[in-house]
Image 1 (cartoon, rainbow, N blue to C red):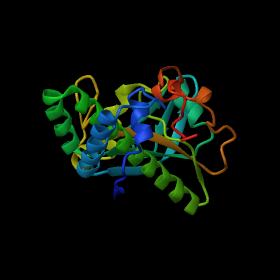
Image 2: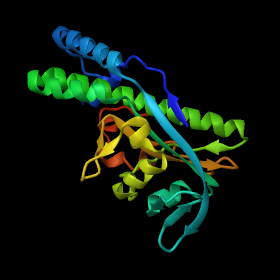
Image 3: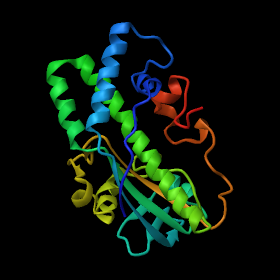
Length: 233
């Protein structure tokens, strides 16, 4: 399923979090430049997602590997095994806000490092909004089927290896449909892209991640260090 997602205005508070500023005040000059770059990011963003659901075919507890029915992707690691414990299926998703922002990032890098940093943070906020919209869509579709969905879990979280990125993108035909490519080091272009796995359950999972302490990103999360959370509380 390919979905055109709504384009949002970046939340200035979230942009400042990604800049490591948290609730700190900024000068009127920075505020004005931030507003300009947020507007530019909103103008260029074209949020789209590819989403597909696969039943879980088997689990190898000894190797901490989950195989999917009709999909070559194998999900490896204790972290993803725990995240999907009890799940009957998984939704794979890839989200991007497009190459136009990538080109603008490269242009600003040659012109003004501050504007480039402000634009980069605004673009990061927008791709997170798009990922949240895609996740909400998965959750809504699960509810329509009388099922439940947990939070998204991306390659690189915990011990889920980045090495699964090529197969995940292939399963979603994301190269052709979204224009997402991978570098030899498995980094995505456009850089403002997100891939993730979401568990689909017949019953409400007994242990949903509700605190930052449970998150695999806890140790290096800049949002947590700034005093906030990605849940908006």
